Image (cartoon, rainbow, N blue to C red; front, side):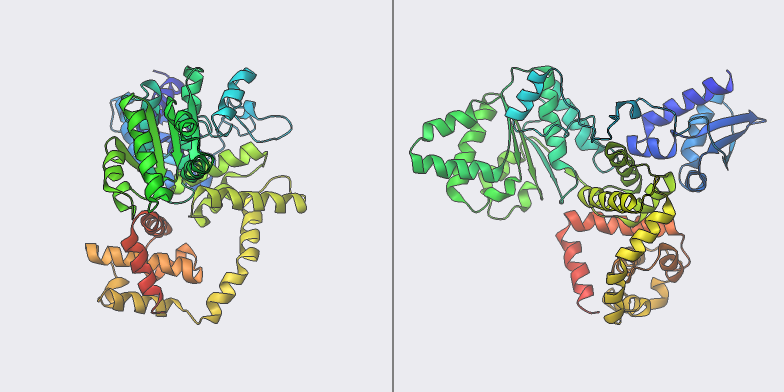
Amino acid sequence: MDTQTLWKNTVAELKSLLAPAVFQTFVAKTQLLSLEDSKAIIACPNAYLVDMNKKRYYHLFKTALDSQTKQNTTLDFILQATTQDDSTPTKESKKTPKNNLPLFDIPKPNTSLNLSVKAGLHPKYTFETLVVGNSNNFAFAAAQGITKTPGLLYNPFFIWGGVGVGKTHLMQAIGHELLKKNPDLKIRYFPAETFGNDLINALKAKNMNQFKDKYRNLDCILVDDIQFIAGKEYIQEEFFHTFNALHMAGKQIVLTSDRKPSEIQSLEDRLVSRFMGGLTVDIQLPDFEMRVAIINQKAEEKGIRITTEASQYMADNIVSNIRDIEGKLQEVSVASMANRVGEVDAEFVKNYFSTNSSESRIQASDSKLTPRHIISVCAKHFDIKTGDLCGKSRKKELVSARHVTAYLLLTEINLPLEEVGRLLGGRDHTSIMHARDKIHNDLSTNPQIRTLINNIKSQF
C-alpha cells in the first residue's frame, strides 16, 4: 500500500472515531510524509497542532495507523506546510458567495423557502450550518433520527441547556429537514410565550375553536423555551390538551428549555411526566475544539480571513456560549476593517483583547484581589491546606477544588493560563484549560456549582 492510500485510510478511520469539530481542527490538515522502519513522520501546518497532537491525540493517530500497517509504529509530528493549503478551494469554501455575505442554506426552489418562512424557521438554522462536537453530538444524532421517522422514534424530543448553546438551531434544523423530505408536512416553530399570547387573544376574541385548529392540526410543533409556561395555570392546561392531541395522533413534538423538565419550578406534574416520556438530551457549552470550529465556520460565513493561530487564541480566551463567540468575532471583524487589516492574525487578536479587557483588569486591581488571596479563600472553603491545593496529589477532592480555584483565578483577575498552571503545582496550560471548561459547562447546568462559586466569591 502506497503512503498516500495508507494515510487516506488512516484519516478515514479517525474521522469515524472523532467528533467533526475535533477532526477538522486536529486531523484534516495533517499529512503523512514518510513511513520507514515503523517510524511515521506526520506534517502539521502550525506549531500548535504539532504540540496538541503530540500531547492529546498521539494514541488515536497511532492506533489508526497501526490498524492499517499491522505494525507497532512510532510517530513524529513535525512543523511543515502540507499540500492541503488553505488557499485551495474546498467544498465548503466554494459555497462562499463572492460578495462575502453570510452562508445561508436557502432551499431551492423558492417554494421551499416560502414553506420554511411560513413554518417560522430561520433560513440559516439547518443541519448544514450546525457545528457538531462533543457537547452536542448525541443530541445531533437523535435529531437526525427524528427526521427519518417523525412521531415514532423520539417523541417528544426535549432539548435542554444553557443560553446560547444551540438549542434553537438544532430544533429548527429538524423542521428544515422534515420539510425538505416532505414539503406537505404542516410544521410550526414558535416560542412558548407566543402560544400563551395567542391563547389570551383567542379568549378575548372568543374564538377558541380557531386557536385549537391552529395548533392541533399540525404534523410537528417546535416549541422554544417551554419553561415560560410554568406557573401559568390556564396556559399549562391548554398546552396539556394540545400536547395530548398531537401525541395521540402520532405527530412529532420538539421542546427546548434552559433546564430539564423535573427542574422547571411550578410546572405541573402531568406536563413533567409527558415531557420526559420521550427522549431528553442536554447540550453543554462548546469545548475548545468545537469553539475553534465555530470560529472558523463563522469567519468563513462572514468573509473574514483569520489565521489558525488567531482562531485558536480566540477559542482559548472565549469560553462562554456560541452567541458570545460570534459576537466577539464580529467585534474583531469590525476592528480589522477599521484598521484595514487584510487578514486577522494572532497578534491582532491579542492586541484587541488586551485593549478591550483593560477595564476588567483595572476593576480586579481596584478590588485588591490577588492570586494568593483567591487560593487562600478556596483552600479555606474546601477545608484543605494551601500546600495540598497547589500540590501534585490527584485525590478526587483536591482535583475538584483545584478546578474551581483555576476557574476563579482565570475569571476574577484574568491571569494567563500558564501562570495559573504554575501556581497550582506546575501544571501545563492544557490542564488549566480543561479545568476552566469543566466549571464553565457545570455552571450552565448545575445549580449547586453556581451556588458554590457564588459562595466562594462572596468571601473575597
